[in-house]
Length: 487
Image (cartoon, rainbow, N blue to C red; front, side, top):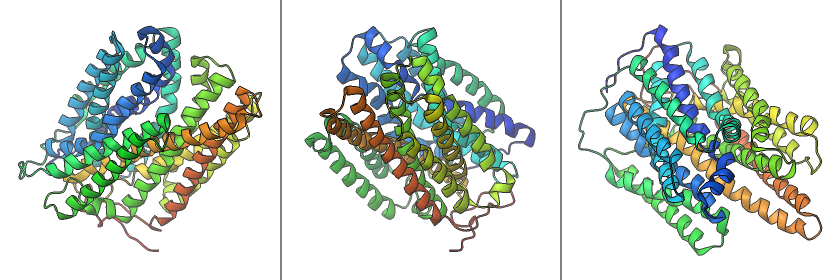
């Protein structure tokens, strides 16, 4: 695959374009959450249908990410990026115009599929543009801020649009994001020819097993949230997912042209990053969900005010992302920065277990949000930058897809597991407490689970090499060549 090198004066425009697209994809995972009650009242669907508005997006986004990454490597990041943006915009328009529940779910499914196409291409384009430059840390600081804080921004924007205009604008707004990013991509992203060597040699068995396996995994987690872990359908989906993903590993190990070359995942730095992202996302998305419930159901905030309440977390995430990629902190290395971020986030989440029915937002919730944001911003920003270091250009898209998949699977797993914990704790408290007190007890259980997940991410981050270095030139070597490791 050949890429045209981006001149230094255009690198920052590439970053802006990629950041806009990534923000659109990340915030779409939460922007609709706040709008769900309004959409339900407008379209008249049941409570049982509400999870499908979220699951429809998560299912195809998580399921198609690896395929999207490989298509980006095959056809070029710029082409795949633009097609993904255009498709996402059209799907968003269809969702905004949806006359029925079925059309809305279909639009969300399409959004997820096109998001899976453009997200890996975005990270791949950023990685190759800033490879070997002294500004790589700054670029990934911005990208990490978007990845870590985009969900909080989605809650703010969703509340504002639902209150000021209509729930439909939570979908229409994506058209604006996509249009700006498409123009930027056409103007500043380097043309890419893609990997045209041996075009017929596509790992179809690997693609089939991983797509079906990830579909079953995400759907199984979602079903566990609503039907419980002992439900036969849940067990069947999760068992099938495990079998399919094991088959995928076996196929990849034997394939001459694997969808995911084993060296990408087995590299010490990248493998650690993928595990850290799964656990950190499990904690982060659970806090978003259960704190949004707490602010609205217990504190009585409107959707708009609940969204605004998350702003300090988004701002602290952005600040921490920039600091984590400063030259001074970068010299400390991932093995120091990521565990420190995880420790801060864990403290913030533990603080949330102290909130009560009549707790003040300013004295209890706000400090916890700021600490969690600082920690998650540090963790996400530092980790994201390591996901594609040392990967050959023809594999950069799929390497980016693996880290996106880790984040998506982690978020789905966390919400499913901690929803079960929350429901059990609330039911156990219901006999001796009022409904609001029981709900808060359930939220406490979820926050403890989120804190445990992020703390475990920090412990796993101690597996990072003590020192790592990217090549000083713009070239990107094969896996393993970019890291200097010592234990």
